[in-house]
Length: 217
Image (cartoon, one colour):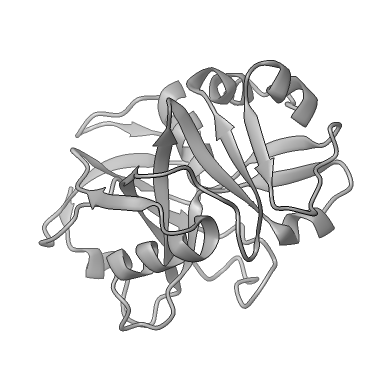
């Protein structure tokens, strides 16, 4: 399927960005501070990123700004993905071809199951994430609204994809790394739940797609 980014995301469409990051063979995710107030038994983890500051802010500029705010000035570059996927809110993943010039994102994610924080609470309104591949020049450090940075391998994600609850203790015993801001602690019994780009990586590994295929969950 060929389309322009503007076919999905108009200037008035709520939208933001996220980054797919790896550091020493670990996928890098973040836990916002707001997650600590959500549930006594689990917290969700997300890709690094956030909402556009304004409709005029480019998605590349948004991704770089959010990364500096959340994990420090550690991104060396964004780079075009070989393929771009459209991940619908109903779980369908479809490969698309964006005709826009510039850095090609790996993922366009439609979200209707909102966090309940900020202005996005209505499931009838879609929020779109434009997700880029990026290279890290230095190790991320959680800052501002990010409570912790989570480092997971493909193996950890595959276990989560199998529906197995994964506590902080279980993950760290299997080599995962979780680094919190100074003064913030994460209970060892808390389960970590993938959300957003983390769910995409898990789903893609369970059901790889080609240019003409779709994956429905």
